[in-house]
Image (cartoon, rainbow, N blue to C red; front, side, top):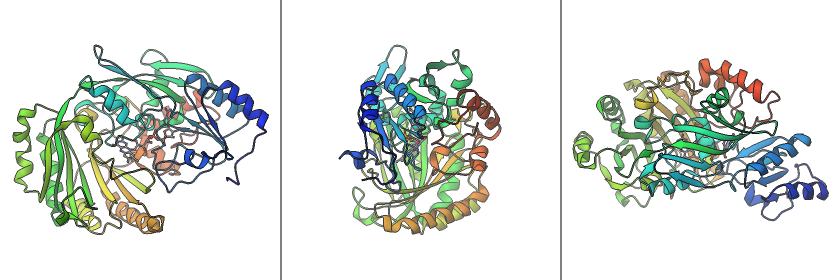
Length: 462
Ligand SMILES: Cc1cc2nc3c(=O)[nH]c(=O)nc-3n(C[C@H](O)[C@H](O)[C@H](O)COP(=O)(O)OP(=O)(O)OC[C@H]3O[C@@H](n4cnc5c(N)ncnc54)[C@H](O)[C@@H]3O)c2cc1C
């Protein structure tokens, strides 16, 4: 039972319950401990109440109640955020998990998605029409936080970030009002949510552009960690001529066990996880240079797009300890790759990894000022993740992540992808991540949320 959260009189809660169709969960409820869990088990927060909203009306009532009772508010989409920004101590969690739907319009190639939906739900619904919305690479991630922070994945090189495919959003603002924003309606606010995180309001519905994606050719190739410098510098050059339909993120990793063959278990590798969405008849030709690099393990083949999108779900179950640190890079110099090899050789726990996601192509084809996402001139979004089921390994994981980050950081190009950071990043980090867009974001924040009602996020101070 929570010792810290504000306790409300039963009549007050009964009154709120009359206004919302969703459930209100209090510290005294038996499912409270389950409901307050987020994906990262390192986060252990005790809100005063969790309101599971089922529609925009519920969200409006929750906002109104929180304002009247001076409650801090955290908004939870998929609950995946590394820093646990979907939960707070002693306040109200506006949980959007009851607002889940995906409606595909195959003729317009658009997709309407409820604010609490998960990527796997979107991929499942769109795949039926051989369409896909560019988003992330793990199916249990929330579309809400991912989109509002930018959204990168296998389709980014060809079709841009998730925000580059956002056409419209329904939102509840800090004053409780409901608005629809797009290029014509409230364009300043529409601009701000394309990377400005949860700072501006609660999105109850997203409208995305979708693209024709069906079967893909992809999977994993691995090289011994000793070959890291060679593979990374080769890949960096290879990308310059590779078609936009090909994407692959670099990972330094340890093979933790099955489903990989036993001879690989507990060894460390430099890997690339591939996804090719182009003409499958050309896959052999496209992957010839990859095979010429003689990976020690290859698991490549045709699969439906949702299959590659959920390839790692089984390894990354909810409830693990996670620590994140991020940076952007414009290229992969041998000096940087040497550091990657060094720290990739001393992975502290089997699931801890370093990833470099490619963000050239369509992502860089848009000017930095077109959306708040200000580092489109970088080529890679890098992230170091310490991951383990056992809380006892937390300190060694965090130390490894920080040391690794300190070694890579001198080669970075400034700022970082805030969706790949823990919470409590300094104002300076948030500012440098938005670069020249920060001032404009601040002005818009001042206009729509002058009291900083939405502050459990990578905060833009009004
Ligand atoms: C295993 C894993 C894989 C990942 N892979 C990728 C990837 O491939 N690409 C990528 O870009 N990112 C990836 N991420 C990072 C991911 O984008 C962030 O963790 C993101 O914050 C998750 O969104 P969420 O809705 O699940 O998070 P939550 O914890 O629910 O929320 C995060 C933040 O977003 C706000 N928010 C969420 N939904 C809404 C909404 N509807 N309206 C207003 N505010 C909202 C919250 O208030 C909070 O500030 C990954 C994360 C994990 C854990």
